[in-house]
Amino acid sequence: MYYSKGNYEAFARPKKPANVDLKSAYLIGSGLASLASAVFLVRDAQMQGDKIHILEELALPGGSMDGIWNEQKGYIIRGGREMETQFETLWDLFRSIPSLETQGVSILDEYYWLNKQDPSFSHARVIENKGQRLATDGQLTLSPKAIEELIAVVLTPEEKLQDIQIDQVFSQEFFKSNFWTYWATMFAFEPWASAMEMRRYLLRFIHHVGSVTDMSSLRFTKYNQYESLIRPLVSYLESHGVQFQYGTQVQNIVVDTTGGKKVAKRIEYIRDGNAESIDLTADDLVFVTNGSITESSTYGDNNTPAPVAEGIGGSWKLWQNLAEQDTAFGKPEKFYKNIPEANWVISGSITFFDDKVVPYIEKICKKDPRSGSIVTSGPVTINDSNWWYGFSISRQPHFKAQQKNEIIVWVYGLYSHKPGNYVNKKITEATGIELCEELLYHMGVPENEIADIAKAANTIPCRMPYITSYFMPRAVGDRPLVVPGGSVNLAFIGNFAETPRDTVFTTEYSVRTAMEAVYTLLNVDRGVPEVFASSYDIRVLLKSIYYLNDKKGLKDIKVPWLFSLLEKYGLKKMQGTYAEELLKEAGLL
Image 1: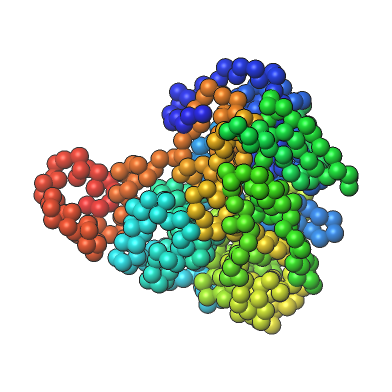
Image 2: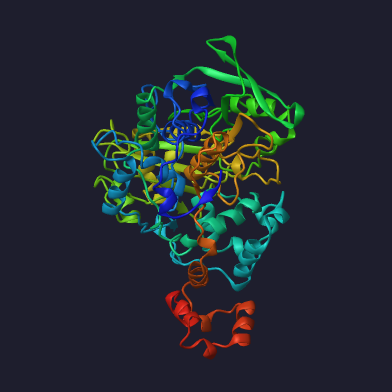
């Protein structure tokens, strides 16, 4: 497996790998990483579909990529996905998946056209004081000290940030900035989260520093992620004969680690209450999605909070059983244990059935939620909320079956250890009605109207105990490599597998690990597109300095290291040179 860039590799089709007809594949879990792996097995490794087996614990595919109508509860969305144009492997995948709505076009085509026609743009990224836009919204408000701290983190080698928290490398000056508000609430970072992952995010998305205030760089699906992305993937795979086996909880994969090799020998699982197993040879490839952020999710209703689940769940138990066999298989306990209380745990799906809330949405978002256009373009953060509450409204309808009178709003709170501002409870203790009431209060709905509107709506609380486990402080080796050293037929995929440079909690990471796993185990002779290299582009770096300083030119920037650089070389010496051209293009001159 090797990395590549450019159209030469991107448009090429690899030859059929040697001996692929002798091999079969077992994929544990049916989330995006697993489904993507199956597509790459079919499309690029040219494996016959009937030799690919997907084993899923639940009764339907998709993993954390969800969105469902539940007859007892209503519409449920645990979370959303923010995507961008530089998700290289994701778009490599979906260029090959046919649309279920428009004959003759791909999901990528459909997605591209939609986001050209209806681009993302947030008219109010942060609000306070009952629906008022933050006065400094649109500015990053970073002090010179905070900017120096950002640069210092970026320049620190990853191995020196092992087991370090974000709040151990930044001062309070940084956390008071709008940049932190935008960054944390867009990506779900907490002050206790991994500084190593924060560094990766800064490098990976440095080209978006200028648009983090208005979300204009984001791209969104037409419907929820399950209907827009998962269903087309499943349809493609089923059309190629890929086998799906639901209701199957894999307990363990027995691996022979003798002789310096790692060979998966047996899959042990429970199906319909019965213990069963599959014996494996070296030609039977196993792709494991280890761990899950939505494992042990529970749901409440209008009158009931989401309960606490018991136990750690099947995906974590499987990873633990694997890790006990070899240290190369990672340390799952670093991610699922000791998660701080000041953490995102609860989200909510609110369905409004009338127009009473529409004027308040329009006042904040400057969009009619019934127009069919994207409404919030990602989260609207409530800055003076004790829960650090936020809401997001996607294109409506968000579900194909959604009725014209229905508006679906997704809410979440990054802090679970404080009582709300209107509801005097922690968010973990709140019923669906109370989640809705807290939102209405912060949107500026008169307090004498809040109770009636909230009771008329349907709100489903969802408790996800591991939703931010990706961001737990970690060290090198805590996550297994996609293909551990010496592995003959075992690969790890998804956001708890280790691949360099890319960032977790993204669809791109899931698909990238899937492609790397398939290409490595089957020696597919085509490059895996490298992580978008914006941090190596001097134009992007200069532009980031401009935006980090709230669009100031060089003469107005008070950063000591930059001054010393200018004094050494002098602006006059740059006149008429390529350097001056670059500085002008970045807005610094």
